[in-house]
Length: 133
Image (cartoon, rainbow, N blue to C red; front, side):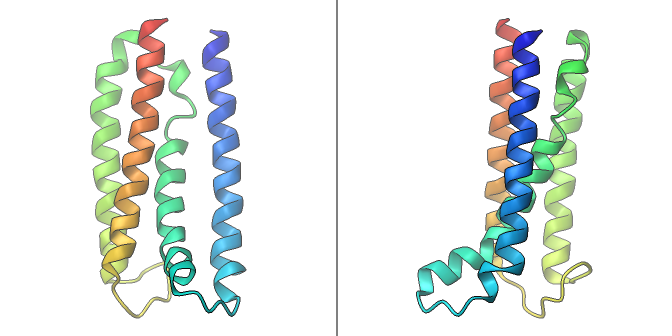
């Protein structure tokens, strides 16, 4: 049980750092007059990547409370929720609801996909660790 406690704290720390990075990137770093095109590119896609990662990890905070016999069901729902989140990111990119973006950027969608994949990979590591205990 102590290992799950440590995992939960690690997830919360990742969430807090992710939220701080999201806010700093979206509202501070992107406003700076940066000449380097590579840095501009990464600052442009960073909010999508960080948001997807934060959302996928936030679904795992209560993972330690799920009963072992319900893990398969949780796994199925977790995948469906991640697919739903990806669909929402794609819709948001084409038809902005929450942002003021006037252009569709496929790199933003790709960054969202990568963030969700990394979030899912973290879930797989946590699940494997839990099943081994």
